[in-house]
Image (cartoon, rainbow, N blue to C red; front, side, top):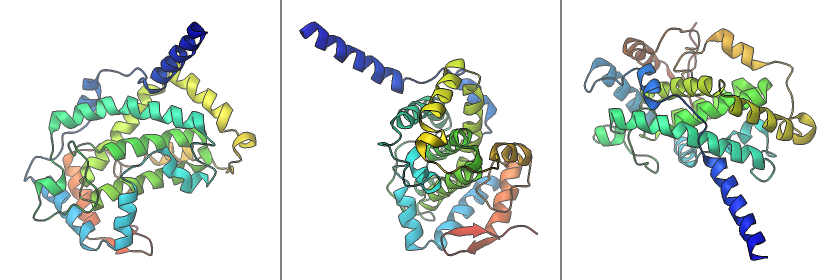
Length: 290
């Protein structure tokens, strides 16, 4: 009996380890080489980054700060605003396990790049100008961990539920912007995190084990008969590919801008963004370019 019980415990431990063990990826240096360097301290681009944070915080309303605080402990179930109230760990246990492993996979390259550049968080680098408005995190600023996870989650959720990809991306954008509002990140940190997430997903989709488990998850929890999810007739994955969203897609009105994420692009986008802030009923939006 003891042997049998011990066998069950061992099996449970093995399953737990497998659930959080990262999927195979290229070496961390692969991702470091493909991300741009953060703006140099006190450079024109760094100043633009700083001014964008100041602009966001200047007009922050209490409800916006509360939303930003709510995202501090963010996970895949923050996307219930898109999927619906049925989207909970209790109803989607395999989804919870899958995305926990996805987070563990993304954390390695993300932390490696953070430690490599060691960019201080905005509220620490410029305490006289940028405030800590939400619960702080340890670690460095570039790239954003929340931005990496939320964008990666949105892309994978969009594969599971293609009709709502745009809405998933918008939710990820809101999470990224909340980190800038809270003083935890610069806009360029969020931009880099989105690029990192795209690189991670491209690598993961080349792994047979990842693709197999994604398909299994789709069949077990994401077909409409079992999950009760609404289905759209539009497959937003093709729309995403066609539009080639820029690396700062959370800035409304700039989705038509293409090109690689280099410092001059960051400066131009952020500079234009600062002059186009507009208040809406729920949060800060950017006026669409005419």
